Length: 290
Image 1 (cartoon, helix red, strand yellow):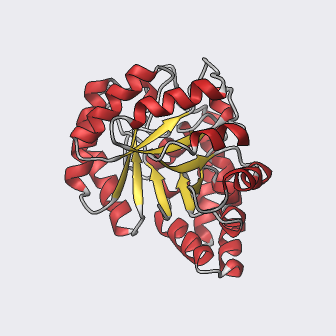
Image 2 (cartoon, helix red, strand yellow):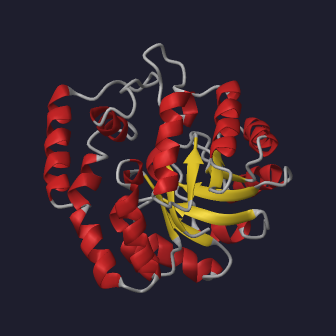
């Protein structure tokens, strides 16, 4: 895995149903921008509030719409059996890579993590391990990652702590060749790649995929001067994407651009009016620089 993978939003109609018309148009924009792939029904896609039937429909739709993109299905939960069932649904839809978050709430030991990922690996899917302690309460230790590295089907790691020291510890533990390390943090993509990372699973690329692709391509080619310039230019807009819980700001920004509604699944709520005004101003200022 290499390049920009967009953690794509899941648009909803005002009725609450998935808006496949809007979703298809968003996918077209990603293909046109030449992203490497998309992650469907991940955190940004509100996967935690989607039913299995809805995920199955999303997976099938995305595979049919974007047969040449590298697709990753969000199938991780804190329930191993449920994660296996969702992973089997992704495979049935023709998607062979799955994003598996470290189990939240349960806070398993390294032995439990190994068992969790081993059970999912038996489906035959390629696994992207997702470390995001800000949401799960579990920051996978380097020793635990080394243990999981024994599972051949775990092929990549989405590292979303924003802590480059943690990446360095991972590389010390498992080396640079065992996994494709992808940043899950838009703020630190360029330094992440400079340390051996292969790209990003991005929130910002929902809105500005071409800019994200340009930045990552430059970094992967070793043109860190160009890449760093873009990284710094996107700093404020990246902060804006996390003014409230993801995906509230990014979906609100897409709604501002008339690309989908700002409908969310509860318990997420619409963005505060004061923050909407701030977001609109930040987007306006950012787009003046393009």
